[in-house]
Image (cartoon, rainbow, N blue to C red; front, side, top):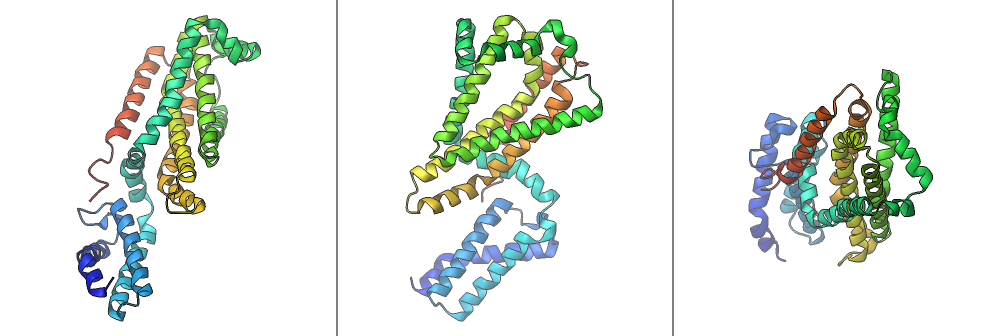
Length: 329
């Protein structure tokens, strides 16, 4: 492509990016983007500027053009890595915009993950409720008896939290380790062409479904569901997110397109990193709720059900609507 054509195609984009840098440098903070600029747009535009700079050098365009693009690239680099661009503003933007938008971009894989996890979980629970003896074909009698003892109303004095604060903190750490281990395993196993992710999703879905159905059958509803309804909104959703991220890795291997499989996986990993980071955050929130709220024996079941309903509603609305209209130009 001739230099004149290249400049004609991209001149307005360069001017807009330069104007954004000027506005940012005047304000000097991460909130300094102009009104029509989001952080996500900046990231995409900065990458494009770097591509244009690389092209101008490889095509031996004029020194003036190469110099201008180099200045734009360096200006973008300074904005991206400026220290005060990292803390609160970036975190809030990630939570309110980048994370939910990243999930919606992968809505097809998210739907598949939801069906594999929540769909199979509810189907398994329904099947066990209809045919109770099937539970013993999936989970050992010893395990089922242990779970029954945990939620037996007759042992209610042993259910939930009658611990000191040190024990609560220890359980918080335990739940974080357990939850994040499941999530990272679900995500990372996607590298086996997605098969590993599917297996872990189905395994957890069937296990949770069978346990839930069995608890319903033995009549321990009032001790089981008040415990799980609160933290389940974050924990179960995070597992589905891990499944979505793992399936994305698997698809990158199965359908690399014009890239090598290695490059395809690298690109996919970068695109889904907001989902992985957000997923880990949700597991931590779930662990906090489980350790300090779900396990409390001082709260009524009605309070826990109402809180659980609010949390589930919040999670659904958050992923459906948060960040809309702010992530694009």
